Image 1: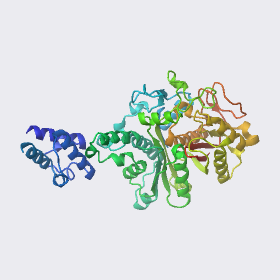
Image 2: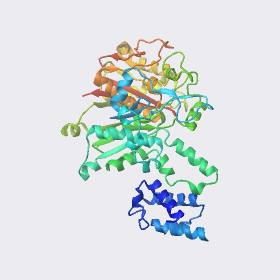
Image 3: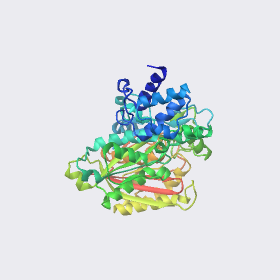
Image 4: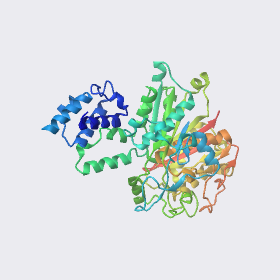
Length: 79
Length: 410
């Protein structure tokens, strides 16, 4: 796993209080990890802070799974 | 009933420490108060739950803790104890809809607002937590309790500064009388022992500053050396229930609310009117609604904040009781726990009910030299065994708001 993926996973575990094993790439924040809409807003903010990236609202709305988050951040970082 | 206070966690733990004359006041530990005029407060002690300390993760899941200010944490702790103590677990949708919540706070999420202000001030408004608003809102204790237990009846809250706790219990009992609910979870929660809270009340010249080196002596209602109140934090919650409803399910009944009175001073934003005539009228209204004679009241839990207003309340109580004044005991339990602001009235109403249950008047600590003599026994230093069948509890708040409640044993 990439460094970004590791960090994303850690943030998710911390913010949603879920077990690390549940944070698979396919896991959906809302359906699988017990987040509500406010939790996802906070998660996106935590990603922005941790990776020094801007995630605009329309992009944030498309981040539903752990993999979505990793892919988006990796793309931003590569750009 | 449930209490979390500077004396610790749990109804019986609080009561036994209170009766033993112990104090929950100390030097402020949650932050360094050196730059502020007042260095003492009553803070809820951390520690293992079984030892009467607060271990928050035993009550609120870790991932939810950051979504609520501390006043909500404390409210949830006391509400959980109260609801479990009551044994009320509504199974049907109808019963859930007949169960409401009315928990207030004087100030709400002050530390949360402070922290958020700094985030915005530093130009990081976009980093503000989406949980900021629901963390600070006063009615969110009622909200969280309803969500936790599925109570779908009236969901309400009270904000009347230091009279909040009595107003919440009194108003909730009225909702039951009016038929809006069969069961109401009611009370107050407060957590304003933070730099902004201490600084604000200091600026209003309301806090004790002369006992920074001897914190346990700082809260001394009616004593000639008193110099302001000591802020405390905590929550007091009761489960109120329509009498026949409680009897039918064989509920444990601690007591009955028989009287409730309210008034406004229409005088000054922080100072009580002469002779505390607003307090007198609130007590008078409570006695009238109870349909009792003042001589039936064996114990008064005074507002008694350890400020100059103590003697005014004393005057009003003497006036109310008249010839019966020499028979009544009156104490201020703020001497042991400090002033819990919006939670004070609820915690003190609970102490009044336990005073009836055990026929014990809790003491007024540090009352070494009363500034005014009175025929009313103010239970200095040590608890007293008394004949107490009915008790009156007072709470008065900034803005000139007064509330009194009368409880009776069952």
